Length: 306
Ligand code: PAJ
Image (cartoon, rainbow, N blue to C red; front, side):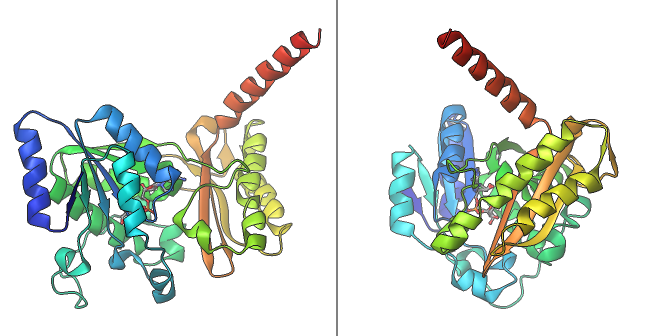
């Protein structure tokens, strides 16, 4: 595995790979790697000849100085994780390598309209401009490739897809399912900042989504009913302060009033636990698959016990 710190070398190595007919898979990350990141690397490993992981804590996408100061940095462990996952190239540039004039303002930035408005876009002004700018840069550095993103950051995935299409960037954006702890909490680099009590409380996010999803199975229904039910679940946990819990169209991320088809819906949720902000989401129809599986398991159980 090769660790590369400069833009020029990364561009050259990946261009050379393509010149010899090999396909490139890119996994953009900010490090502090966990099983969620590893799932993206495994998918890239299975689908591409050369796998590159970028590790860069992008200052442009942090509004809160406290958040970037406390963002976990575990480079040595990350490097071993990448090696074990069969990664070929780790691209780990410095801030000055990516933004030579830093801390002066970056002159050219990318701003995506539509899907970046609302939700995280409202709660974290400027965040998606920072994400779109660094991802555009990473795509320009990697060149034509498949790029892997988690559905965990569902709005980010929508922003990246929109940008890639609008700017005709020759990258195929691949969305990958959310990896969760056994109690349902979505894996996140920020989970390590939770106190033991907050960690226990954090499970209300995925519980609220499950309640919302169950309601959606009775569609047609009102999105305000679903949102209210999710809010009540979160409010049962005093350590968790809800930012938003909404049912939105899965493509435009706009809140629906009447929901007729749960397949077209995504539930989004965000909350604060002390200084830590957590987000989660789920598809409107997953529970049907879950329910079908539960039903089959129950049937098998009944058959076993005669
Ligand atoms: P980071 O938070 O490190 O996440 C990197 C990628 O891992 C993202 O695509 C994210 O959605 C995915 N991911 C995180 N937790 C996951 C989980 N539990 N299951 C599945 N995928 C998960 O997202 C960023 O970094 C940055 O904004 C970045 C895109 C790298 C731009 O700086």
